[in-house]
Amino acid sequence: MLVIGNGESRSGIDINSINDTKVGCNAIHRDFKIDHLVCVDKSMLSEVIRLKYHKHTQIYTRKTNYDIYIEDNIQVVPDLPYIGDLRPDSAIHWGSGPYAVLLATQLAQGATVHMLGFDLYSASKQVNNVYKGTDNYTCADKRAVDPRYWIYQIGRILDSYPTTQFVVHQHRTWDLPDAWNKSNVSLDSIDYM
Image 1: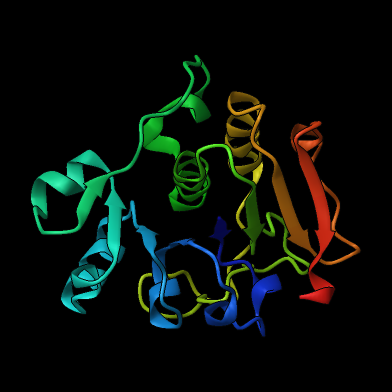
Image 2: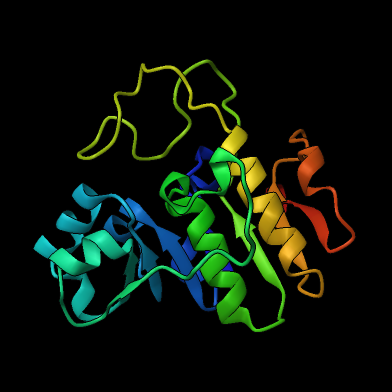
């Protein structure tokens, strides 16, 4: 199972050539064939429907969007696998990336989940996203998003599925967040993909 974020580290990797079930998020549909696409943002979901991408790929979104766009191949994102009292524990504060990791984990049913393009941090002070400056994305010169919620939320997924192995594919200089430093998580160099 391969789950793909939209961090710039995945630039140059031919995702179509990877023979695995693929879960992606948001605008990845513009470039690659994905088996399962997570779009929790209403504007991204509108784009997917306008382009009829949902006709050949399973789409997942928030319940509030699902109630508006009742279409074939559109489902509600999975429920969170834990209960928490912090703000990032609220489903409304979960973005497409963490939901894509959760969905891939559930679909994998215990098989290894490979994570690609979940950069979290920016090498510069600007946004780290391959789609920055395009429709439904922030301008390329905007300040990078604070990744604390993503780190925390994906860390909670890793905790909730201790028997699932997660392999994070990143450049050799990338540091695994402390919240992801678990016995079921390993780091593999993207430089060899």
